[in-house]
Image (cartoon, rainbow, N blue to C red):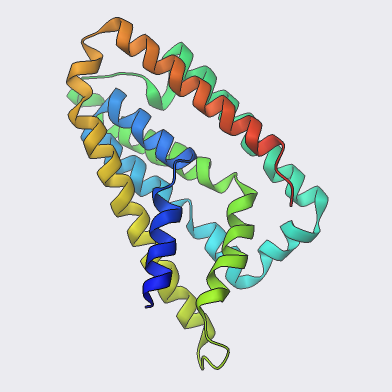
Length: 205
């Protein structure tokens, strides 16, 4: 496990993106437990892209305009839907302080987080180009090595996202008791999801 891989992975994971934005939004609306669920869901959402990169399916997205566009526009629509939910205070970003709703909210958060990452074709192409760089040409078991690197990347993703979420959750009580601050945050998150959707819409293979 080289230092260059760990540093590169940390930069990639910690960089603001859809997963980070969603984890922060969940932390501020639903609290620490839900933010951990969001971090877990975002980590699970990476698995299909890593498997696609290892099995060569990411190459199909890279070469097929139709396949790439189909997955991309599903992602765009879903991000815009999340922006709408943030404004309407519904879905996984709805504030619910009742204990009875905690488990249901966590399941919803995980499913949403998984979908957020799965519906981004750029992730598959990223891992197709990223992982092989850290596998030596003379590596006797390249697939096992890629699985090892993937496991470390996923562990790092969960840890960093969980820290983001717990930090934001610590500020939650100060935010939800202020309607104006909460309204501003919802508009900000909605704008963020919409901006990421627009960015994905213009993404090319």
